[in-house]
Image (tube, helix red, strand yellow):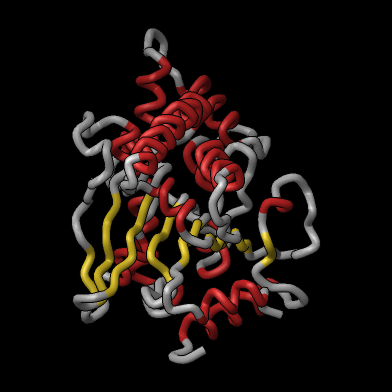
Length: 304
């Protein structure tokens, strides 16, 4: 069954959703042997000799230690490894675009229902595939937030820029990549050192958001899009290491104004641990594969 609250919002023409997109989206529609679908496969490809533990941020730190050359600074080792990650993912992205374009679920990105996509993935497959569609065009990067004048290589600038998919002249979707993307290796967030910086920058983004709000303005960032729209989490387990996103979601909970619901597609809607208590199941009583089919029906219907 579809969550009735979600269905009601979907029928409201004044409401649009922000989607949080994780690697599970690739895993469902591609296959489990793609490095886009699995942190484990990506890191194992990067360092086949490393025995992984499943704590992938710590595993990446172990790989840095193992790959460090004598007299080389660890930050240089990290930079070399992230460059390798970029090249691995770039090749995989090209393969997917070439071989999976006909079956990739571009139906999800329907501007009738979605205004923003916050992708936790490093690739741009949805944007690039949709850009091939007649009547759809992909913009260059934009940053019209209060961070547009800071260093163009800083994390806070890179994480608050976006690209727009324009569907004709009247409808569009913004795509945000707060954890980075393969077109710019400096933006890619891997390992605890880079993750730790996200807390500092999350605070900066939040403070700028609050300042704009006090002045009756809006700071155009991915953080803002989590607070002003109802949210759908797809293919993302939302582990506790996603510090920047949890900071934004808990800020939503602390706000005094109207709180929008956060929906999550789950393999088991009965999960009730500390993480899942923050979200409402998108569907109940149907299997995971059937949930995707039901979502496709809802997003491709001309009239609900």
